[in-house]
Amino acid sequence: MRSPSPRVRKVAGFSAAPVAVLLAGVMVWQGSTAAFTATTRNAGNSWATGQVALTDDDAGRAGFTVESLVPGQTGQKCIEVTSNSTVAGEVRAYVQNLSGSAAGLEDRILLQVQRGTGGSFNSCDGFTPVPGALPAQSLSTLAQVNRDFATGGAVWDTEGRVGESSTYRGTWTFDTAGMTQSQIDALQGSRVSIDLVWELQSDDAAPAS
Image (cartoon, rainbow, N blue to C red; front, top):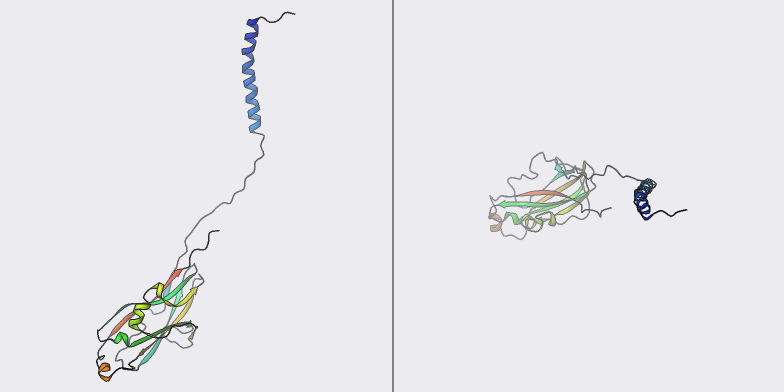
C-alpha cells in the first residue's frame, strides 16, 4: 500500500480543520444548555414616609384672656392636644412671642403647665396630672428657658396612632409677694401676652434592618 503523496497529505490536513471547528462548536452549545438553574424573588419593595400632625381643641380661641387682673388672683385652663400621626414621636410644650408693657408684669405672672388625662378646653373637670411637672415660673423666665422644642417640657411620648390625645392644664397666678405697695401700683394698666406652643417631632430613625 502506497503512502499518500505530500500534496494529498496537505489537502487532507486543510479539509480536516473545518470539521474540528464544527465539532468544537457543538460541544460548546451542548455545554451551555446543560446547567441547572434556580431563582427566587422578593418583589414589590417600596418606601413611603410617615407623617406627623398635631391639633388642639381651642377652636382658634386663646386659652387665657384675663381682664381687670388684681394682685393674688389665680386661674387655670385646660387644652386637649391630639396627634394624628402615623409614626411615633415626642410632644413638648414651650412658649414664644412674649410681649407687653415695660412695667414688669411678665415677671409677676407665674405659669405652670402640667400634662395629664381628662378635661378639655371648656373645662378642667376630671383632669388628673401625671408626675414630673416643673414648678410654676414667671413668663419672662419661661421665655428664656422654655423657648423651643429642645428646651420644652411637659413631654408626651406618642405611639404613632391616629387620634391619640393628651390634656394639658395651665395654672397661672398674679404673684406680688415681696413687692412694695408702690411697686404693685406701678403695674396698674399693664398688659402681657405669650403664645403656648406644642410641637411634635418624630422619633429618631431606628437602625436599618
